[in-house]
Image (cartoon, rainbow, N blue to C red; front, top):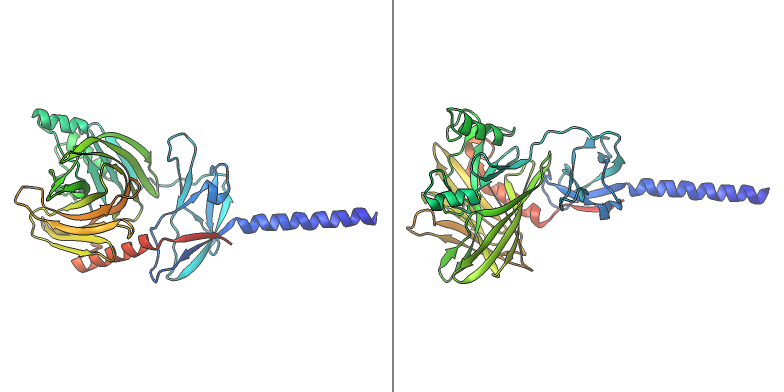
Length: 388
């Protein structure tokens, strides 16, 4: 009898210890090592980190406040299996914060603030946006139209910027306005407009390869695949036909993503055929100011733009940066501010985006470049995670 009681007592202790361990292991710590407030930065939790076979019904709770945090599941491979869960913590400078992994009985509905899609009704654009900025690139039908002399075609692998003032999605609304009404997205009726000229320039982050003293680049994208849209991130895959940089055959594909609250798209490129690429910012009328910072890894162009002002930038993680160049030529649209970026194991990462003064958020060159500096610090000193 005593032996049985002792066994039950020990078993109970083991069970309690097991439950407590499980409870402890559901809490992880997010650490900010910078003297900067961290917000609108996306943290990814993989199945491996969470030690979960499936991420369905997983939620994240702020331990201090008890608030359930907005999350987004991502299927990177398109196989129907979720690979990671995203959320955006709020962390004070030089501090840590605890979050808990929980099971949700019901997934909360959230607004799709980060959105992208293929646009067949406007030839074959691919457009993407969040609550701050919007962009688009151009596809093979637009290229063929241009090459055939058909009106409405576009031949460019540059990145176009749509200048939006509002936080809500505008892509579908603006295309409808342009294609189905007497209005135009080239006119500002309170939400912003498309008055950013790309042409054959690099726009806001298109790539090139420099050979001798000339820059070469691809034509329009040829393939696309939407990866995700949601409250935190939109991302998609695009591929380009092989192209020649003065005889060197370049293979180029990329995953472009844009997170909630960010002015910068992330470009994760797979590149073969060169050890270095150059991501560019169009200089338009060449009446703006180019600034660079090699140590921090960024180049910026602040320019007069219509009846306002506009800042564009490229930010490169420190291990990828090589150099910067202001390339000025009389040929229309070929003057660009370039970030020259190392190709490491056929891969390149950089960020590119813009800030428009009419959004009344980044109102001067000084404010724009200060924002770039802080963004550079954050991507080079990412938020870290550990189990409690």
